[in-house]
Length: 127
Image: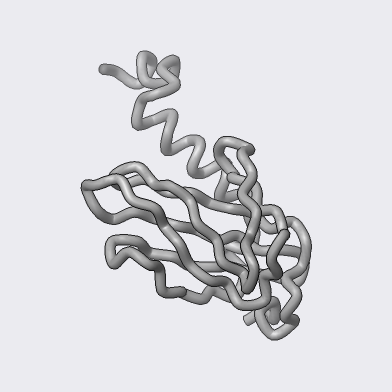
């Protein structure tokens, strides 16, 4: 498949990389924010939070070849807060204590945006 064909194919690698770049540029937290890595209930999942005073992005990456449910706890994220998927626009609600859980496809990922500051100011200090 040549570049012209890939540019027209929404499921091509080129289209996926373009979308990743666009979402990355829409999330200054990923470049300039404080980054913390959290334990997930699955050893094949990388969970990390990038935060600035204006908001945060929780990124969940399935590094395994099997489907899984990624669950982690984000300190400073109160239950009932809504997180929005940067790629699909779907929303996820945080449970009590900042617990967040989502399904992930094999080698899948979700970038979940918190559009308001976290409740713990220590977590949003610029580094």
